[in-house]
Amino acid sequence: MCLQKEFGLKTDSPKECLNCNHMKSSMSWNQVEPSVSTEDETTVYTLDSSAAGHYECSLSRLRWVCESKVSLRYQFSSWEPHRATLNNMRLEEGESLWKAEIRTEEYRDDSSTRDIEFVDEFRPQLIQRVNNVYAIADILFTKGMIGEEINANIIAAPTPQAKMRVIYEALNSGGPHVKAAFFTALKEKEPFLVKDLDK
Image (cartoon, rainbow, N blue to C red):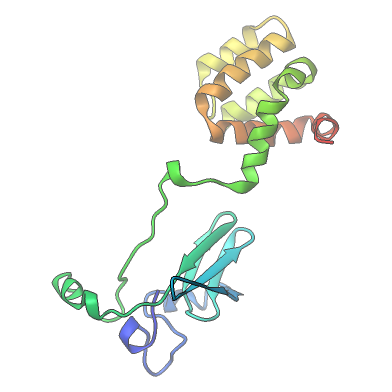
């Protein structure tokens, strides 16, 4: 995040960050108004983006690009306690001062949480009622969610129920991303079944 002078903004144009100014003409930034709260006498700003896109905080001009719903919290503080560290890093005004990373194991996509719960909750019904097993397995295989051996086991299974049990073994070992992909394929190939179960 950059702010005028002290925080790396061009002083003649307080709304242009030196790091992402070059992106301004090629991308449309959706303005987001932060909600403001106070925690331990510190003002905290919260930003929410509802979907994939390019966003900019209307207050701080903090920009972010996301592929799904994101919630950010930040606060302003003085650089003075950190001046020596910044000088040792040989940073110049306008350079990035920090980078935010979210490790995969810490990331939780709320939109897919319900999808995963659906896959787990309706396991018995899905095993009995899914008809388009090949089509769903093909989607998972094409996306790299299941390997050749599992795909071969699905094809070799004698009944649709046995095929679905093989898929569920793959879902349980593959984790949340595979379950979310399965749910997406299930909605595409068995929309009426999903609607019926999700009442």
